[in-house]
Length: 194
Image (tube, rainbow, N blue to C red):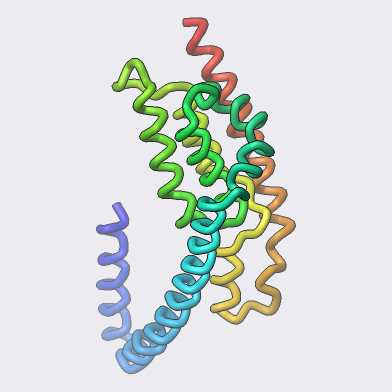
């Protein structure tokens, strides 16, 4: 859908600028935006590389084992199949920690690996298990302690207080995650009754 919307908006903006005699302003805004896009991209790439590197270090040290032990009771309660699936447990832990730090890009590979590990132990390959459904919900809503990506975008765009959105993000992600978990648990119980 966006593949159609964006080209239509671009074409209309060109036509509008031609009829209003603002072609010079349009050209200037295009070249000015290139500079902003490059600056924003470099900020995001640098932040993502830093945190992905740190997550890789955590993954290969004893810190991962300690974090897994801390998160194990919560993860086993939300994802019952992880009790017998260590690979899924480790990847869900990495996914959770990455999301907790606001690193959606670093969380994605761990989430995909966790889903693959859960699929291997899935009896009916054409249906999602309860843990797979919960992983989708928890990964999508994800509580963020440090919204790294959003802060770096705000900093790149010269916001007065780039970290000023931390408390609202805490509130919204906690509420969103709790609502998502409760709704998923209710729907899972209803499907079991049928």
